[in-house]
Length: 157
Image 1: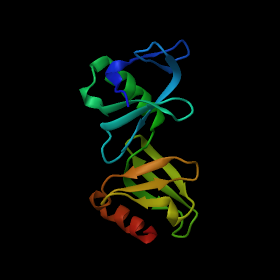
Image 2: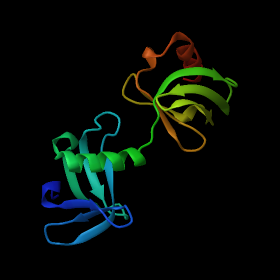
Image 3: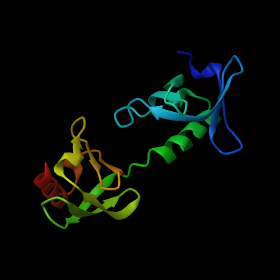
Image 4: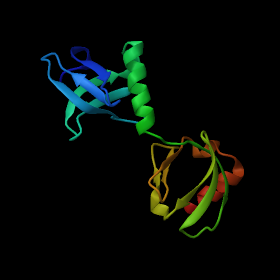
């Protein structure tokens, strides 16, 4: 696989990423995808075309020139909206579906948990919670939550 230094990356007139290869071939609508978005977000970024075909590979995001890194980080941020839960304030019921009042790094909100299977265990002690709208919420360290949040969470695990 060819690495990014062989390519030019910019936005087209519509604001989509455009990748031009060393051979001059241009691909529009390119999307960056992290190989390990939670465990190693800086390592392994694929640039794929709209059909999911890998066009280029970036070993480490932090090693890119500032302008290119900033461009990719802004694209990834828009694509990977994943609020981090800092506190579970309350739940409507311990049976599912239930509405959770939570505090996140993006402010206070609520999520609807359809079932316990929507809480996924990641590498300890992280959890990923999918709400009824398809938004994923991350708990980086469930043991670092306050006591009330841990008690609520334990009822669903």
